[in-house]
Length: 248
Length: 256
Image (cartoon, rainbow over all chains, first blue to last red; front, side, top):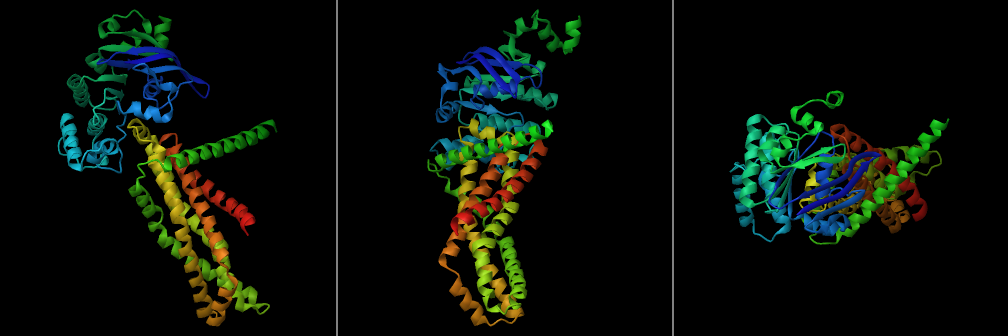
């Protein structure tokens, strides 16, 4: 469904992606792990065409989006939803307006129908009845859940998650994990999650990929990942700093 | 010395680079402006923000500028007995020069900075990316309505400023300095041409475009959190103000 081929990207001579190859299948939850500032967000933004690569290709169902014009990328994007790190809710709008926004922009549904969908999506994330609150009145966890409701408003096929559990308490983290799993199963979505939360990763992933120094150094199911013999992967899973791995 | 030259070269290049980027943003905004949906509501919302909410400061600016202009000119004119020209001087200065420039500067301070701060905050909190992800072009949604509103509203504010400025000059000239009201008005009507007013308004259209474009550009390309938003806001005001003054000179030399 999604295929990244030899993706390269640099910012001001700093190489962030250095030949990424990755395949993501339909209905799969793939978690891309790696250190903070290691280019995970940049990778995610390539998948949805927010950033164009210096070289390489991004295929969405055999369409190479790196070759598309801006207007055609917008058509492809309607198949995506994305949950941003801090939810990126529009703070000038209420929760209800936030979720209704893509529906009002892209569909001919009546206000009443939109309101019904909004209520449904809020119920999906366990936050019924908060349509009239503003994002500034919500806690971090609630914002993420509203962000998720907005991401699924258009019934996308693919959802991208940018560190969905960062900055949340353990109970909220578990709740968000359950939510991702539940929504993925119910709607048969393809989910691409980037994270550095090991516990969550093993809980939700069908497949894990590790990004290290601009390359994917390991991919596999959680079990094979846990048993990986790559010292960098093991070091990351166990929280051992790199210099200690190299010296040992 | 080499370092000094290097710095100058670097700054010049980055300034030219930014101008190019701004031109690209303007072209992109123009190309999106006529593609439906036109979002008339958004345009009205921005017109209210940039225009209606600036009326009060524009009136204040106009009133006192017209007043001080009358006062200063009076002392100069008195030296050779030219007090009768006071009305014409105030009206010409306001319509040709001070009305458009001061209005644009005041709107820059009030609305240009707010545009940069709002878009900058949306950038650093990824709200602009969120728009793009939802398949809504951020330039069309955020930049186009602001530029259109700026182009429409700054000339209207300038008309208000021109009028209030002349009223201010009249109050000081006739009320305080005891110039004959008939002469004040007659000379003004005699010497001010319609082209003076229209050229002034043409300038203000350009200024409206400049200040909204620069505000949007600086906000849209903000980097680096809260500090970045602060920097973008300051730069928007400084760059807009300088551009308005430089642009004013260029336009005046071309128009008049």
